[in-house]
Length: 243
Image (cartoon, rainbow, N blue to C red; front, side):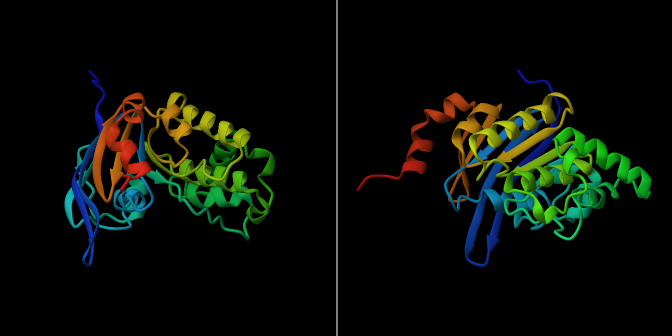
């Protein structure tokens, strides 16, 4: 039995956009130090749920509880201050700034003095493997570099909960392996709790302690990766039903 405290409690969360129900009565918990994978076919509601957790949308019903506090509807800035960081599926660094300056923008949340923010940013870049590109314009990074910068900016907020949105998608096998290694380091070395959305099944199956599956906005399964991989309901959701 897992005795670690609950970091995040998604409690009967529903999100409506007019007549469209994008997330429908979803509940699950994430305990401290876990990596939980969030999967589902395109349009399943994964990004909408991410946006609710990180403060971009308020839930229509239900609530989000972070470390015992109801955070439903709080702004992304307030959530960042509380310790929730996230990456975005479409990476958009500040193209006119250097890699170091991009991370410093995020570091200023915790370190308002420029010198301290810079020192903190260097530590982050060394950890994520971008220190050798610190003075490079962010616009010149490869996709793998931009995704690593996205993680670096989120880490600069010093989160205790990190939401990773498709940080492996689009990378070649070598780059994907390095990113998976970095995610394990975040858990093992930094003790960060992680919720990750990823379409590459071999990645999500290899790194997740548990997996939550959404389909048409509803949770259809939750469990260990090996059980999820063999769940007929999950398989049907991904492969469709024959006529």
